[in-house]
Amino acid sequence: MRRIDERYLRYPFYGSRQMARHLAREGVSVGRHRVRRLMRLLGLEAIYRKPRTSVACSATIRMRTERQSG
Image: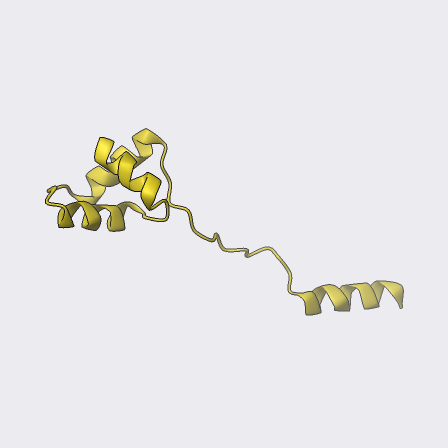
């Protein structure tokens, strides 16, 4: 857990898969699901851009305002 926490401070964008690969390169034999469970236990979550599925594009907003004003 200490190693995962240390690596997370340096690489906060690593998820469980990449963290498991990184630890394997360092010689720590640990599976992805165990890393996932430990990261969840520590409250760690990978930082990445979330999908913005409900945000309208600017053209849609323009059409709405033109319709309302007209």
